[in-house]
Length: 111
Ligand code: 5GP
Image (tube, rainbow, N blue to C red; front, side):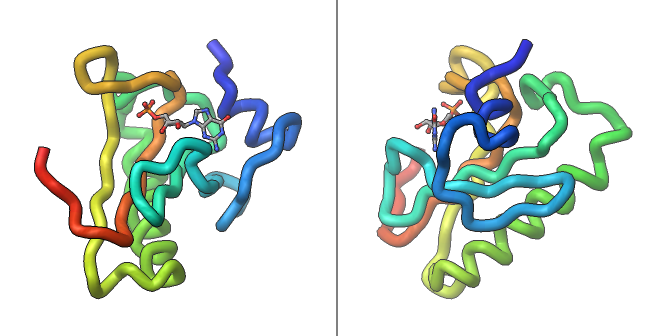
């Protein structure tokens, strides 16, 4: 089932895009939880981490690499940041199109 992220990929609704290629889109979270809060998403629809299979290994690896590259561009690579994938209800997932949160720019607490 399509989500709001499909509309962002299709440019049907606006987003502050920070990086894009034919496979991946990265844009600023509309409700940032830290000074830097960017979502890295695949352009194909994968609802949750539970839906990953071997065919996605390369894509997910590239998404993590792009997240670290964006962290460098945002100037938070050395200070540090966090990459998060929420899965399903208890994981706090609200948009069912898999995404990596890149969060940083302040001291993060755990959990
Ligand atoms: P989740 O809760 O599924 O892990 O994360 C979904 C994220 O998407 C949330 O942090 C939320 O603020 C963000 N989000 C939801 N709708 C939109 C939107 O239309 N535009 C942008 N830029 N972010 C969105």
